[in-house]
Amino acid sequence: MKVYRDSDCDIALIRGKRVAIVGYGNQGRAQALNLRDSGVSVTIALPPESGSRERAKADGFDVMTAKEAAAAGADLAVLLAADEDHGRIYAEELAPNLREGAALSFAHGLSIRFGLVAPRPDLDIFLVAPKGPGTALRADFERGSGLISLFAVHQDASGGGEALALSYAAAIGSGRVGILPTSFAEESEADLFNEQAVLWGAIPELIHAGFETLVEAGFSPEIAYFECLTEVKLLADLIYERGIAGMREAISNTAEFGALKGGSRIVTADTRTEMRRILREVRAGHFTRELIADAEAGYPRLRASREAASAHPIEAVRARLLSLANGDDGR
Image (cartoon, rainbow, N blue to C red; front, side):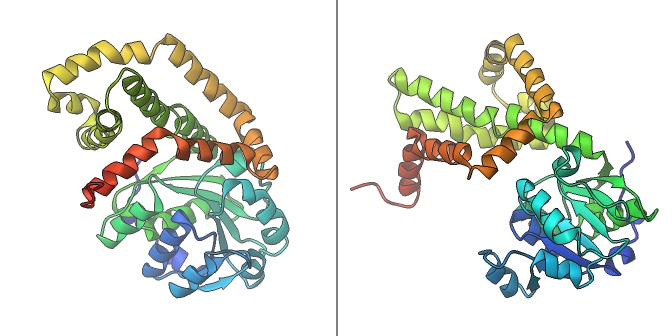
């Protein structure tokens, strides 16, 4: 795989564009600030009722609606609002108002891969996906480094879509460390699979199950918390720094032998079969349809999940331990 760096990118391309960042959450704010620090003209596009408008103004940006930013002559609109809002924002505000030959970009391939956005044929459509949260993107940029980004071009109406995507990626700092090619389908399918089957789905569920098993067996909740949650950070840091094989070299023989004994009993053939089923569902669009249906209904499933997570006993243990760490011994 070719890795692109600053030397492969012409940052002057994005500096010559008027960029509208649609959304000012974790990614929107970080990308907007990095772009501005790289000499790019940036406007923030938010709905009138958005609570983020004041923060964007305090950061020194002009704030408009997406319709106003497009009508004002934006050369590039970057859709960084929630995925489930992309279809409406594009159809109602961007498509009727973006100038002929403008560009539209995303940080996630879902909306194009699963048809939430059907772009006009005259637009360049590309993806720049930093592989980390906006807070890390901004912090690394300010340190003179960056986050690796993936990039892809879905529609190259101008013939310069790839060059513009690379220019954008360089302006947010990714050219300092690496910009990797992908496709909208590959990025979105792999990301949706990972969110369900590994990171945000499986790992928290495994922590809950381990905590519950220990507490049910009579262990103190605090000990269960330390064993099943706190040490996850140690594991993640070791894997990030050393890889999985290197992580095993850094732990005790007891821990390594425990991994040998336990890992394959939890991640069984049935687990792998379920992972393949999740991937098939992602690729078939089932997940995206369920996400949109939940959004249209007012997020009942998401709200119920959030409430259940907040009510789990592990959260009360966390609060007690944080109080101890802050010097409150409960007396």
